Length: 243
Image 1 (cartoon, rainbow, N blue to C red):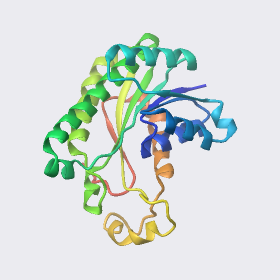
Image 2 (cartoon, helix red, strand yellow; image 1 turned 120 degrees about the vertical axis):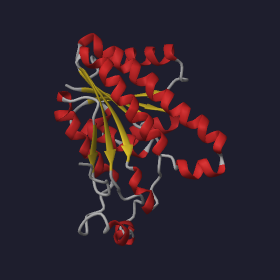
Image 3 (tube, one colour; image 1 turned 60 degrees about the vertical axis):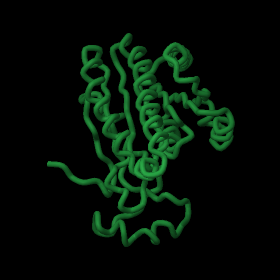
């Protein structure tokens, strides 16, 4: 049975990815910032999925604490095949205009957290010489339609992915990013129809997927990502093609 660690499982992408992995019959550890959402997520899952889910409250961003957490969870799950560093998508443009000092500190904190957790996961995987680290992101081109734009985080994360991929390549551990396209932000039946006009600029009347449906694009890397590293795979509508 494959195993995975999902960080920031309380975020929109993290929660959807966690459920998708459980539906694929994986054993999953999901980390949360606080205990309350961890208990709620577990309670909302069917009993059959709860049995394969471990939850953890993320420690302070300290190297020793994160290393210990990752090793303990890998031992409890009897392995670590995938580490997925999800995150809350932040509107950096808004923060830069109104809270520049907080924006700078937050950017540093998010990228430092990515480094610390990926480093800990990579250390565990390198011992077995197998595994994959995946960093989900939201496409910056979607800010025209009101989606958060995190260009500083995205570029910093991509630079880290490419650099860390080179370091882990001798140990057969892959490091890749996955950039999502637009999705239905409101859980309402009419939300997709209300946004249809804006989305039509990207494709010929595309469907507006739920986040849970969009998360299934992770299967591209789960099934085929071990043959590549240091790459950014795009999934969904609203992402510019690059030739």
